[in-house]
Length: 526
Ligand SMILES: Cc1cc2nc3c(=O)[nH]c(=O)nc-3n(C[C@H](O)[C@H](O)[C@H](O)COP(=O)(O)OP(=O)(O)OC[C@H]3O[C@@H](n4cnc5c(N)ncnc54)[C@H](O)[C@@H]3O)c2cc1C
Image (cartoon, rainbow, N blue to C red; front, side, top):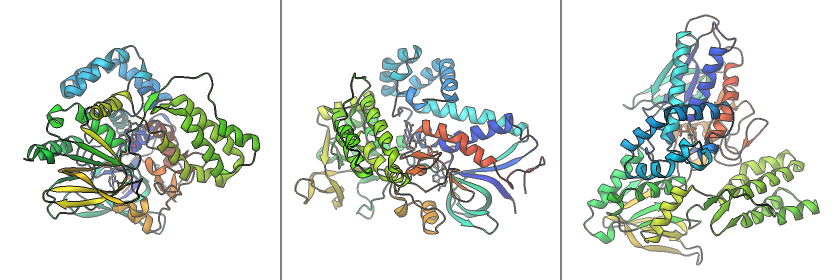
């Protein structure tokens, strides 16, 4: 039986950035004379780009932050910007040919700024990072293979189960696209599967008379927009050509931006309705620096000296209210408040810090949800024409009426369940990741319920030590690390490329460390 030295489940940015570091260390480090046998498994056929930077997103999907924050520090920043400068004209040409109306607008607004290296002004199309990351990985892989340092096997399959064997090995159960199942045996296992799937909603209607999209990025965002358009175009009654977005996470504002650049779709639609607890779209961003950042509530508890983690966060939330004015988040002000809160937390002890990173951090992030100007302007434009309507309330389910779905929701003012007054032909789930304990991912379900991994306080991440281990030799990287607080990993969310770039060299070290992984000969293990 062949035993894999290191297996990665998932081949998105978390795996790619880690392998880039690992190959680099092997090529340039003192470990020559070893051959590592690595397997990378992904349920989707495209490797090395993951959901945001590859074909599952749109070529028009933009980064959430300006490119200067997207690749914010470290060696990759310099390397990426150097590559970008060299390849800018080719990238612009490719984008202009493939991006349609959105690309036309984006290039008009941003090409001069990018040429002038004004990195803090531009939100780049995410596919650009996908090309960079994939090229870099493939170049290093070629060298590492030529030097017989690694042998890499790619498998398209969904990892559905893990079994711990005696002797510290793992069996990983794989389901292939033809539904056949096989098992591989692994010494070190890396779980790099991105965020947990969104909460799944059961939709009534046996043969779904309306179109329901549970995951906007599966199989592909472009295919889902096509399905939306086809359904609307095939709906005879114009008053029924309505689209419902459940939840307002980042995917909903991305979709609105894409739709606003697709008149062929918006002309087919009557109303687009977004239901969310907040009842609003993410805020505008202002980077303006102020002379003073008043923090009255944090100052008051600092002066009193008598606070705990709960009263500290309460004060921080009050001060954040001041940092948001007229739906604009003043980012330097918010940064100041968060920095100050973390400073005041230092005296509260480890348990308080764990509570902060596990539960309160995400609450603060939700208060300051914001999006870049292009996305924000698109949702504003749709609101202005009243094609987009925002409903504040708790989603309570769908009932079928003829060939449409009706929205039931809890009105936050009355606390009563109501039915919205429009029928929907297309319903799209734009909620966030579900709690791991209820995950529809068979892999996550099995890791939790077989007690191989423990869910941390956030409910959205696995508890790990400072070597990324959720169990001995089982490593986690990517969004499932969110909510941890230890010497190395201290983030309430890791849905962020810059954090992956920071963490991946450390994970590469952990994977190369220890006995039993490296073969001191030039053969792949078997
Ligand atoms: C749509 C979207 C847009 C984003 N935009 C930004 C941005 O602009 N800036 C930013 O900093 N961050 C952004 N993020 C955050 C993102 O989490 C990180 O930047 C980074 O891409 C995470 O990489 P990953 O490899 O952990 O996840 P992913 O890219 O999700 O890759 C995980 C891979 O695992 C595979 N997989 C999952 N389960 C299994 C299984 N059981 N078996 C086999 N394969 C499996 C999936 O097919 C996928 O290819 C975005 C995330 C999404 C989803």
